[in-house]
Image (tube, rainbow, N blue to C red):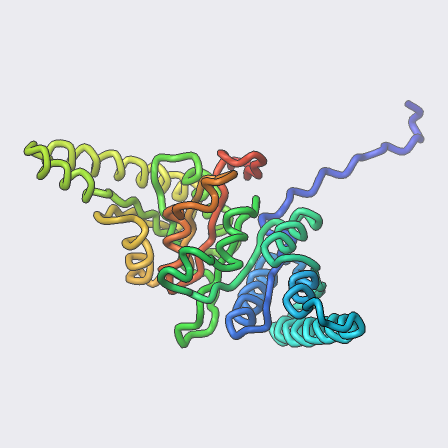
Length: 327
């Protein structure tokens, strides 16, 4: 190389942030607005770009309104009216984001809400989805589900599910409650929680649940002493929680580790709220096929019962897994 020749330098690749691109879905409801407000807060904290979407299922609306006696000239005004409504909802949502100090983009996506939202996430390469839930209960929810339920089952990125208002505005994620067990999805949730806590400067609460009801029930039915097995169960749960807490402390993060007894689906939301957590982080298996539509997972039950936001992380049983680098 000549002495006077310029040295070429290749810039180092910028490390990818945890949440660079966010997608929030709104339907114009009060909780849709809460989801937008939460997404805007999250985007500001992480320096993310934010797109607000509204799903417009034109085919379903037209099919519902049309009969063999319908006039085809009525279809165009119907579609125009639907788009006007969608644009008005998105304009309000964009104003909410701008009031929080964020310049967001908006789009109308065509199709059934679940399919359209997941398709948009994949098209944009989003790092997470934010969506509100109406908090339905009972058989209506079990059989019909909600858009949030469908997105949870099909999305391949973390999903922030925002519950209906409990009278308080959305708040920064100062404390994260992480549900821990001995599974790959739980490992993925811990990794995500560590990264999220670093960015949010949040405290972590790692919680393991010893589901003792099944064991004690069998002990009564088959007349054996459950004590030794219960002790072994608690020891195993504590070891898993302690390992997660050790990782957090090695990274300089504030954390605590707790073990509680009970059914995970019902205990996790209650304990998280009693510890004043701002969100729950939980892993779930990526179900496919018929199993996806049958009995809900612990994560889905936690979403249904939680009064605070829940971040659902897809575990590596999925067909496509996004993993975070270890530090």
